[in-house]
Image (cartoon, rainbow, N blue to C red; front, side):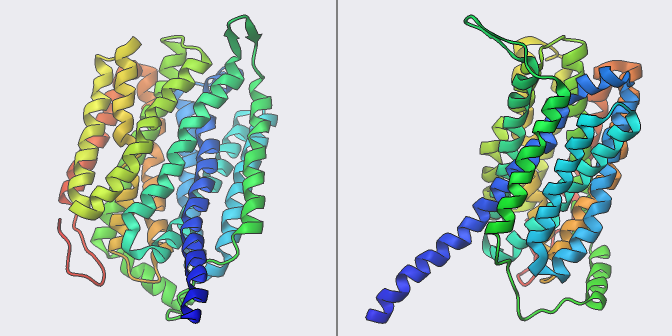
Length: 420
């Protein structure tokens, strides 16, 4: 009895530590997405300061996506082969984001700003493979929920960033309080701070990455597992679905900001509020969709969500200003980012044990590289046919994603085949 009583606090401590890792990684993901989302609010300022075309802006963000895709390849390899080095990968991720914003702050040239976004893309992408694979190993029975909780952190970052940055850029004029706001370059320098603080906290807090002593991943076995994954139709289908979702997300979000700035002449703060609304509903929807996919299957949830993205993207054709636009932004936000944990969980379901990082790398690398062309194409469309053309382009991408979500093969490792 005494032994049992002595072990109970240890069990409670272990449980708290286990779930503490999930919440800690989710918080770090929030900071990462705060930095990733903040750059959107700087776009109108950077575009005006550097006299850029819509195509140039789209190409800049396309380069960011390409950088993110390429970075996933070594990130996946290192996450699987050197799981003890997961904290170092996360620290490097945040350091790249910090350096990218430093470059934005000092840049007066397009090429240097392009390089800055490449660093930000690499940094934000480098987080995915180690974090997602760590969660997949730690929470095998609750993967949908774990991925959703982690991505809820992203939603919080995506929601708070545009409001906070919009306020810093636009200032305050309310109830006798007058503040003109900060220069956009100073705001870029300020964004270095949370990334550096997060890197430091990871260094001092994250000491025990998951270990699986039954599996040794060397270079030969890694490439063997990678070859199997590249022949895995279930994983490749999710990578393509992720590409279409990401291309839709980046394109509509980027040119919605430009549309609100240049056509509707919204203030920085109002633009920030609308970008925040685009992700606010997802804070609730993300864990709900993740849990529903655990219970009812990935296929039905991902198909419905991609159909929702298609419908509410087309909604901008008539909900193009005022309250109607605001409501449509909220409705689109229910699905736009929230579907990601379901896609990731579906890929994890079809992945052999020990290859989780590689699977995430294929998912995000393939998605980013395919989706890297979308912002530039959307920019060219916006130059010629304005925002309505971008809406039709994004709706086509999302509709194709809905079809893939419905038809994609499904596979569940170590269980009966899941076609739900």
